[in-house]
Length: 256
Length: 317
Image 1: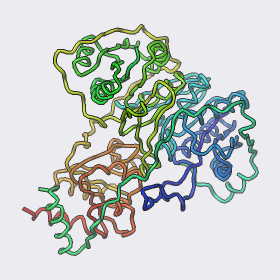
Image 2: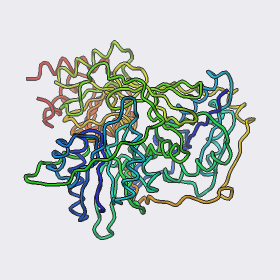
Image 3: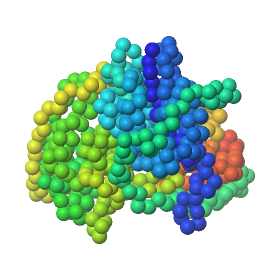
Image 4: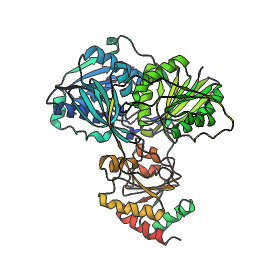
């Protein structure tokens, strides 16, 4: 019966980000969520566990202490237990540091596993590095941008997306995959799932429990709101308005 | 010999990165190398387009995954200590870059949209989008080499220079990867490249049924444009091929005119259309975020509006 590790991140829901009058990001009204792609990673791990006739899905995340909500959310989405690596300093970690912390915890606390699933990227920074970096740090095979996967007989067979189409590949386990959104449809947790989530075991690990902190390499010199607001001229739907709309397109020289 | 490396899979990607690579190499006063699986004839092309050196990777045996090159490239980088490595942000490129960065113990800036050398601080500054495109992040890297992946078509291909000369050398075959390729499936049909189309009409979730895409197609036809879709319409519902998915995780378009039909305007989608000259939208929800990103908008039901638009456009001389 397989042991699966699903990595996920509790991120700012970008739909709530506003542009402040000073051009800076306005994060005053934001809400948080498990990254969209990470939901596919959790779902795929749960699917492979069930297809393997049992086993377990261990969720793992690195974040600030507020991400406890995300751990519970993840447990309601099919994870059986979780490792929560939390510290107030773990805000906006760069991918290299997140991957190093995950690798340290997996190596020291999860002696045996078959497969690690990651989303193709986080919904906030979308650097798409943590999965491949983690595989390299652990010294296990990596298959990225996977659309379909089977697990058994000490190997995975996966379909990965490449520029020219798809490739079917095999790799011995333990291995790591990053998954694309079309691999599955993540479940929407029901009331029962949410209640059950509260009873599942969570191991909290703090910075003090880690032998060392990986050094920062990237420095964010500037972070500002992208300028994409345009002054929208609105039109109605009666024939006169439709004509005005088309005249505006002609005036702007974009239709001939 | 320190310098800039371009690590590419295909010739056209290498030529795009040679354009920006040459500019940076001149500013930084370093050499420019391209590392690629190509022939000695191909190497001459890269040198003519600005490379000082071409490092050729050997062809892999059938079934070998290109990640077999990672240890070899890391070893070569350890020996020659490049200052900067540029890699196309393709599926394979993104994976390879992240894994190589681990071996080289350095930082990586993913999907850079701009890259400059600041002469005062002697540092490479890299811009990228964050939060689905809502934010522009500028990063620098404190370790060497600085690494960046760059999406295809971000930079113009390098021009050809007359009389350039450069070195060519070939690396030895690498050890096998644990990942084996069992089968390659080319895309079943050729998808038209819509990234250069002057008009793009995009179907959003406001289109209720797959059959109703005929309405979207008809408008595109009248305007002499191409059809595309949002992520729900392509990757989730599969009404249109994934290759026509506009957004952060799909393609970016920069037509003269983009028209979104029933497109809500999630930030990831807007990021993929933000370089359009004119953005127009039809949506029945006057509060849809797309109107915040559009120049012209019609607040109305697309099933009512689009036929009217088609009819009126046909009458427009």
